[in-house]
Length: 167
Image (cartoon, rainbow, N blue to C red):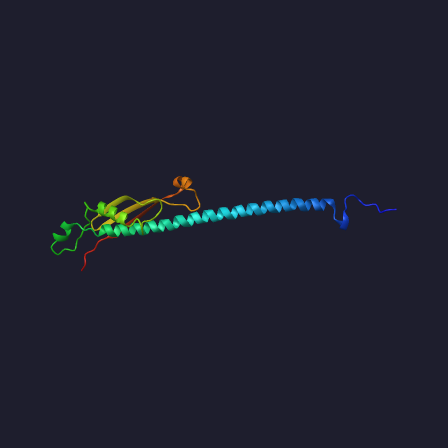
């Protein structure tokens, strides 16, 4: 007569359960690969945003340095001409804010092309030195502008420059 086969086995000795398990396993592997790819993509997006914000922060510091140096060069004429040989200079109180604004606007196309536009937040004058504070909102790469306008971090940087008399 014929051989009696157990219904659990197919040709080649594979059981029906092994074939079904292999199909379920392939689905799990695809799901794990998709989740892994998603995690890598999120990591790349976050690291690119952090790097972009760090670069813009450094560029804002360079802009603040340039504006502070330009502002410190405006010496009060009374302190310069009335000191009779004394080497004491002071930054002009009247002109320092205007000069800082002019320096900022002239550097907008180069050094101060940072974020969504650099603003002069504060300017303090202390004798022969000047402190300048600039601020901007950082641009985030690969983020739509609608979201980036509210989600982008606000960056601020201080810089100090001092004028010294030539000896």
